[in-house]
Image (cartoon, rainbow, N blue to C red; front, side, top):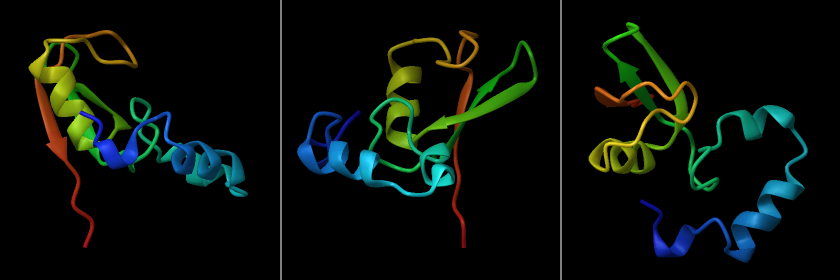
Length: 85
C-alpha cells in the first residue's frame, strides 16, 4: 500500500512529520503510511458509520486483505475516495 518513494521510514517523510508547525496538518495524515493525506472513508455496514483515517491506497489494501478498521476494528465493507475540487 505504501509507494517506494513514500515509505514510513524514509527520511523525508519522518523529518517532514516532525517539522510540521501546525498540529492541524497532522490530523489529515494517513494513520497507516503516515505519508499521504487521509483521503478515504472506511465504511462499515453493521454500524452505518465511516472513518476517515488513511489514504485511499492504504484503505484499499486493508479491505483487500480483509483487515478491520484501524479506528474501531469493525469489518470494512466499502472504501470511498474523497476528491476535493
